[in-house]
Amino acid sequence: MKIIENLNHIRNQISVAEKRFKRRESSVCLLAVSKTRSADEIMAAVNGGQHHFGENYCQEAVEKINAIDHPDLIWHFIGPIQSNKTSQIACHFDWVHTIDRLKIARRLNEMRPKDLAPLNICVQINISGEDSKAGITLDNTDDFIAELEQFKRLKVRGLMSLPAPASNFDEQRIPFSILKRKLEELSLSRPELDTLSIGTTQDMTAAIAEGATIVRIGTALFGSRNATKQTN
Ligand SMILES: *Cc1c(COP(=O)(O)O)cnc(C)c1O
Image (cartoon, rainbow, N blue to C red; front, side, top):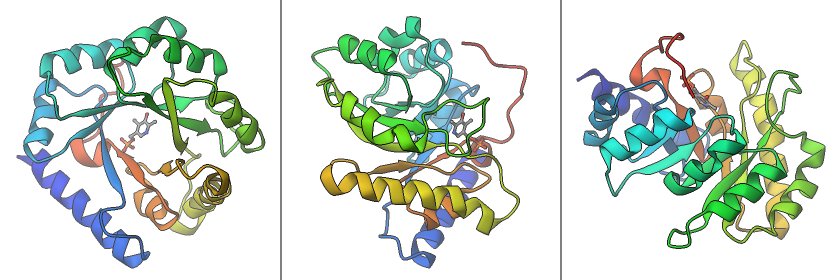
């Protein structure tokens, strides 16, 4: 099966990058980005030992999560969040990577079921300053994280970003290195901040070089996506 082959190839690339950049062994978590993929494709990866999955579209994700109904899987929401979807997200996910508005955080906090652990969240940074992209600015990060600390049903874990595409390895490292420094600075006073969610199929190795603890990989694992098949 191609998905298993791809999975093993990516794991090997992660392991090689960990050694090359003096990262601790197994310190980089592979998040399989399964947006637009079927429950069967997800199950193929599960059978290869994959447990962390990332989804962007709430309705599609909840249907698959319910259909698969597997106790060992860890679901990460990595898409833009509409306020009318916060209840579903708070009930069905373990992580949310795309927090950039207090209002959304407040709703997730209110709606996180009491029988579940606090929801792990990452603050999304718009590191390349693109108008089209979600995320807060680097300058606002400290204040925003301080505000998030009022929400007891959320557990702030770190930073997430999706920089503008860069043409080569050294260019790819630049925004990642800025994020790494920011996380290091924040974690001096908040040791529970241990997560840097950076790197996709295009720039995974540069992200690992700069301290990624979660890489979000879709295309390299499942093949290229059909761009027309996207619903919320
Ligand atoms: C789709 C997506 C990915 C995966 O990108 P690939 O290039 O397919 O690896 C990672 N992060 C986010 C936020 C995404 O939306």
